[in-house]
Every structure is written in C-alpha cells, then in structure tokens.
Image (tube, rainbow, N blue to C red; front, side):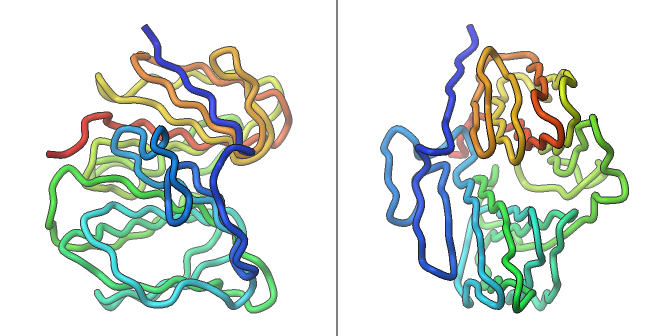
Amino acid sequence: MKNIHFYPASLRGGADHGWLKTHHSFSFAQYYNPENIHFGTLRVLNDDYIEGGMGFGRHPHDNMEIITIPLSGALEHKDSMGNSSVIRTGEIQVMSAGTGIYHSEFNHLSDTPTEILQIWLFPREKNLKPRYDQWDYSNIFQNNQLVQILSPNEKNQGVWIHQDAWFYLGKFDNNISVIHPTQKEGNGLYLFVIEGSFEIEGHILHRRDAISIENAEEVVIKSTQTKSMILIMDITMQLPK
C-alpha cells in the first residue's frame, strides 16, 4: 500500500536573518520536529534567499552529499579542495564532503538576491574521499519534460553522488501529465513544487509544497498552471549503517 504524506509550504521551519531568509523542509538549525527529521537518506532540503553580496563564511562538513541548485541569481563557491567557481541558474553543484572539507558560499551578485535549494543526503559509505562537481543542464532543459540532473552513476546524465538517488527537474505548461517510474525497488519519492501547481496523488500542490510517496512503482504528476516547475527526488529509504 502506498504511504503518502503532504507537506504544505506554510508548515516548514525557517528563519529571517535579514540577509538570509530560509525555509527548512526537515529539522535543521533552530527548527526541530521529531516527526520530520529526514525522508530515507534525504536529510536536508533548505530553500534559501540570499541578499546581494552576502553569504555563508568558511565552515566545515563531513560525511554528507551536498547538492546545490540555484533558482535565480548566482552563487560563488570556494572550498579547501582548491575549487573556486560560480554556480548559476541552470546548473547543479554536488560536493561529497566525505572525510571532511571546508567551504564558503556567497551571492556572487552585489545588488541582486540569489535563491538556491540546498539538499543533503546521507552517503552509502562514510569517510570517502571528498569530491566536487557541477553541471550545466540548461542546454537540454525543455518544457513539458522531466530532465535527469543527478544519479548514482558517473556515466549517466547529470552529476553523480555516493547514494542510490535520482533527481529530475521539469517545467510544464498547464494541463500536462507525466509518469515517473521509481528508479529502484524500495526507493521513495519526494516531490517539491518550485513554482506553479500540480495535481499529485489526489492532492493539489502549490509553490513550495511537497509530497512524499513510499511503496509506489510510479507516480503521475499533472500540471494545473502554466510555467509550473517541480523537482522529483527518487531516493533510497535505507539508511547507511
């Protein structure tokens, strides 16, 4: 039997730091909900709005797969592996923290806000060698299609991570239906509406609403508004030992 949970955007945690307005889909920082700590190996889904020129100073991470997707603007990244880059809308970045890294993230634009999604997943193994990658999907992104932007296989389309997870982005006109088959037996689906609205499993989801689905071989999504955009995360539910 399918196990379905609907998560209205209004019930997310979050904070307003002036330069940073952030919303947390799972327990994070000062927001703690014992019934909403993670979904399988999906640990963090933060929706950040960063004022021009502001950002996060140098700080550490370890044993986490960290994915950043800019929704508008551009993010400047530097890390202890020697990487220095700018991630723009239409790109995805992955950082496998592994045995440990330090990095900083700042809005690359001095006078324009930047919006990002930052997503953390538990890796399948601990203490792996840290690595960094980013990928531009804008040249293959087409309306009314789901585009794979992340997988566990470095030979597949998009960036790859050390976990059995697949990410898809799609932007749709009104009244378009798409079927997404679950990529691995036992995986769960977490769907996050970036813009617009969708009908999914009898629920109408609007901007920043989410829904999780377990024990499903596939899911049907139907856009109910033009310029609707969704992120589908197809994720193993088995936590690493």
